Amino acid sequence: MGTYSAHTGELDASGLRFAIVVARFNHDITSALLDGAVRALADAGAADDDVSVWWVPGAFELPVVAKRLAESGRADAVICLGAVIRGETAHFDFVAGGATQGIVDVAVRTGVPVVFGVLTVDTMQQALDRIGGSEGHKGEEAAHTAIETARLLAEI
Ligand code: INI
Image 1 (cartoon, rainbow, N blue to C red):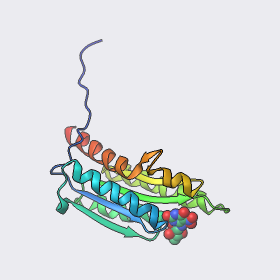
Image 2: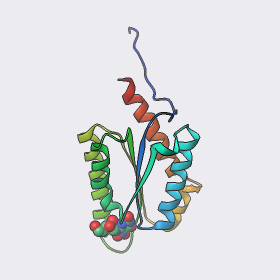
Image 3: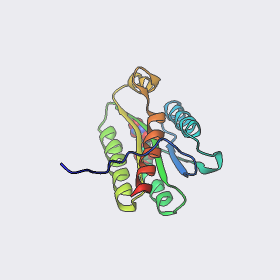
Image 4: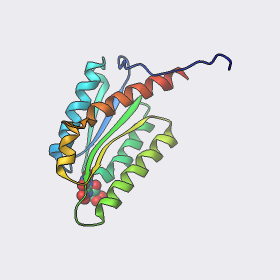
């Protein structure tokens, strides 16, 4: 096999601009996701002025606002945060499915990384486990994904 070039985006957020879209639904969980994401961006060198936060009612509204932000040219990456917790109805599947498909569409159509930081879980305990509990912190992970992907795209 010949030589090839391999690329991995660095976890360096300095000089990059981030827009975070966060759902108010299940606010206790989503505000913790937001805290983790903001902290992780700052720890990686993002300037306060380069991070903006946009609140929407629920996860279903994440894609449309993410799309406008991605199209604005004002963000190197958009981070979507939400928590969809399965109830007794089929509503979960529609909300989770709509948010997931919408976020994928926005990323692919705009070419701007739109990170899926939406918890889709069966129980509140599973959500709590993912905001700094036994399953890590999905807000921090979403921020790391945004940084790494934006850096990688800048190399291409
Ligand atoms: N929105 C969420 O973010 N999480 C949920 O668990 C949820 N549930 O269970 O219904 C939810 N619903 C609201 C939805 O996102 C929209 O805001 C609403 O349907 C209006 O479009």
